[in-house]
Length: 65
Image 1 (cartoon, rainbow, N blue to C red):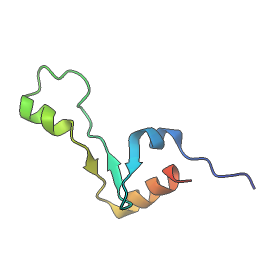
Image 2: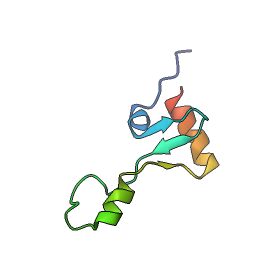
Image 3: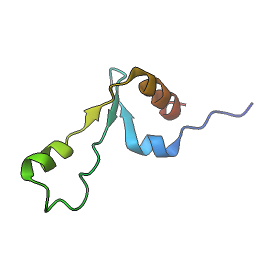
């Protein structure tokens, strides 16, 4: 049986932290920033952790394969 390959799209979008949680970037923070207020753009540039444990397990399987 061949080796499991990691999902390249998931590897580009998610990172695993040292404690094993999954870190993601927020959407809508890359372009058209001139009409979004400053508070919103600051918040959009912060990374966030995944909340749902079921999705967390699925993504871990994709990026750590």
